[in-house]
Image (cartoon, rainbow, N blue to C red; front, side, top):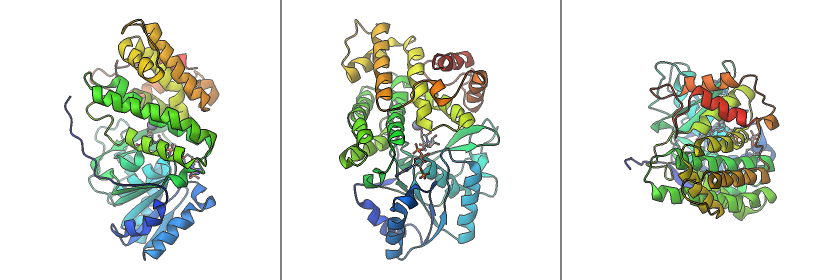
Length: 395
Ligand code: NZQ
Ligand code: ZN
């Protein structure tokens, strides 16, 4: 194992913390740009409470609303222009992963004269990697992506049908103000997708990482077991604050760098899913719920032992030995059953996706990210045919 770990985001976690927003933001600027999504925060009163807290702290603010799920680069451009025109010096992302990701890129675009799409890897020879951004305060309203405490952002370009990411130090939020109370209004389907997303963040590192990471394996298993215990409770009763709290903490830990530290693996399931959402504008983790079990069956054939470990430690299944592929597959079936039980789709047909563009999805995924041999990084690295095979098996 060889790695560096650094996460500068100041995390403030707990029910009721939204009331501290004003005093927290005040430490980072004088005038905030509040970025929101399609209107949920206005309908459920969260926006008004955030604004009261800002006013009480004497903060000035401007607004950029209307960030769409799978946030578009056009919205990022619009938000950056508002921040510049209004003279904002801090950005508040009040929403789900889409709002937080768009806010991060707006914060960097504020200082960039070129087009922010230059920052998103989409196969261009020399992407612009930002080194400066306005301070970002994330206030997640949905437990899923972990964007509130990481340096990634995923942005879509509807014209070119591309969806990809930027990941760099200056995009770490200055503060993540995480109040599980404001997630009680998340509908059942989005709650379930959040659970699937956070689990997939740790299965990527667990199955694609290097050997010899026993502690990271246990961390990952802890996140999965916690999500499987509390996730269904949050889906069954959205007002169960204890369940919302445990799921939200799990979602942060899953992708703030700690659980995957040293695993150094690819994120093939995410990369394939991003291409699907680029074409079909589906919810990110609805796509993951379809791709991940199919990918697991593909990867288990190469390395059953890690999947046997997963089957044993997560579902208590006893395999005949470390090479027992049937035992490994039983664990994957159980995992897929769990996803179904909380209401996630597990077939492409449920997302109205057929095989018409299946080769294109594989080509696009590889254009955005590939190793020296031209394959999608992961264990094992995937050729275009492998990607097509995984998607075909999920039809
Ligand atoms: O837009 P509003 O009206 O707020 O409604 C949203 C949206 O319709 C709604 N919602 C959010 N909080 C709510 C709520 N509804 C009621 N009450 C609340 N408290 O939920 C819907 C989905 O929101 P969105 O932000 O799109 O969901 P999510 O948090 O799952 O974010 C998905 C985006 O994040 C990217 C995904 O690819 C996708 O674009 N990801 C970002 C990552 C990162 N930055 O680290 C990693 C992830 O793997 C992922 O790729
Ligand atoms: Zn994800």
